[in-house]
Length: 490
Ligand code: GLU
Image 1: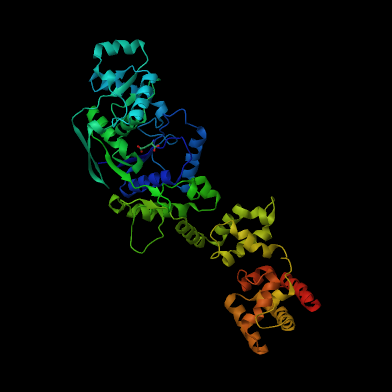
Image 2: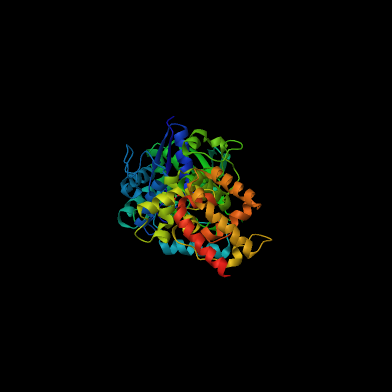
């Protein structure tokens, strides 16, 4: 069997984690089985449709690097892939069901349906939904009226029977037809299809082999199974993916933090981190392995590796992934990301000069392990590009020491700064400091402390030796002189 799966979003909202997870699992499943992934826009709900959501969809997936094989933007042999361009098809299939007496016209007014609904709510009747009034109208009479009166088409649910379908995660699911939504509408009075009809017709015509979708659609599946049977079609295999929850056990939403993909992106999450983390939401691959490329994920993915239990979204774990992926970037890549995120904070709208960009890139090893998001780099490296404010004299004093000693230590530091700036690497610089400290009978740490404060403006900073190399002997020297003046004055 050819594996064909689809992601079928309704463009009625922004892409969020749940949707991305569904799309990603479909994508990985297709890749893992040499199959095809299809994008289908289910835009039948015209009232909630917004072009902005379509743009957001394309934007989110191109950023994530998830590509489909067939879809509205790529075309393919089963198009069109936008439901609003397929209305004639749904109509034709609905009429076919009417002709076979498996569906019927309903002439009930919206007032009647409303009264039915509110009456049932009031009496708390266990029966919900439509009372099947028009099911009893004779076919010829109904056809005559349908030509003149506004009407809908409803599915004639076969009563007194059960419907079964198989879910690869939940096993066999059986449902009494009498408990399914009574005779749901397939074609609305304005001629538009409902989600159920369009979804089933398209999955069949597009030869979808597996439907992987969120568990919130599980309650629609018995009805879909009945529809497949009514058409005499074989249903695809289903797999309803466990829900994604916040840490409080409630469905993931804005309350928990970023939920929209745009927002994750704005906050500085990398697409690789998001893909990697979301791929593990509700799935486990290899014991003891956390970091996977998308190619590895595609290789390891299988429906057997999915968990039944709801997945809990952990922002801390996602941040951990972000840190891991930032660490895998080379200097130029990381500098590019950091400048894009917050370059203007350091270099203004005009961006860095070529020298500044080179220095910024050379500074990446100083912060690579110290940031969780690219935007944090600017603040951490500000001291390299503008003289930091001079701290108070007390800040220069090592523990259990005094101002005079601090000044002496800094003078020593001043002397070896040109050599430190020239040192090929950190080990060489460290040897220099150690030798000098030993000569003067002081601790290497005490020698470094005033130097660090003079150069970076703080007692805690990115690595000192790298900072001196990037600042260069001249700039470092003048910062030390400025600090020495302060200490001598104090
Ligand atoms: N259009 C539905 C949605 O918005 C698709 C559900 C399904 O995958 O069948 O999620």
